[in-house]
Length: 268
Image (cartoon, rainbow, N blue to C red; front, top):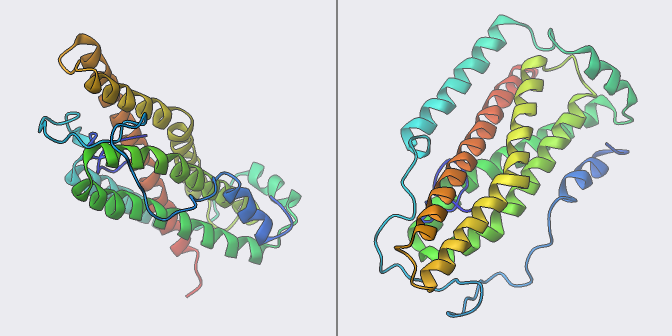
C-alpha cells in the first residue's frame, strides 16, 4: 500500500495451532520477511526505483478522503468503544459463543491458560503495531521525509506490516477456539472482520496501490504529469488508497471492540 498519514497506514504524502505458545507465535511470524541488514536507508537519485525527491510541485498527490480525517477516525473508534461496552453490559462473556468454536477448541492441544497468555500477547502486539504505525510512525515520516523517499519506504514497510498483523490476528483466532466460552460472539465477529480487512489489504489493496504509485512516479519522470494516462493513474491510486485506509480503520475498530471484550473477561 502506499498512502497517507491516515488511518490506514497508507503512504502519506502520496495521499500521501501447534504444541504451545512458541508454535503459535511461529505461525504469526512465518508471514514476515527478515529485516533488512542495515538499519539505515540509503537512496541514490536516478536509480530505477524512482526514489528521488521531487517535492518542488506542491500539488497534492491525491485528494484527502473524508475517512482519513482525524475527526472521522475519532468518531469511528469512539463508536466501536461504545458498541463493545454496550455489548458487554447486554450479555455475559461467552454467552453467545458458537458451537463451532467449542468443537474446534477440543482439537487444540494448547491448554486454556497457555492459550489465554498467547492470546493476550498477540493482541497486544497487533493492536500496538496498528496504533503505532497509523498514528505515530506514519505521521512522523509524512512530515519529515521527501515524498518519494516516504512513498518508497511505505511500499517496503506495509507488506511486512500487514503480514505481521494478519499473523497475529490468526493467532488470536486459533487461541480463542481453545477458550470459546470466555469472550463470546462479539469477539469472534470483531476478530473475523479485522482479519478479513487486513487480508484484503495484504493480498490486494496494498500491492495495487503501491503499483499505481510507482506508475505515477514513472510518468512524472517522463514528463507526463499533465497526460490523460497520469490522470487515470492518479484516480486509480486515490481510489485504492482510500479503500486501503478504510480497511485499516475497520481492522482498528475491530481491535478496539475485541480489546474491550478482553478487558471484560479479566478477573480483577
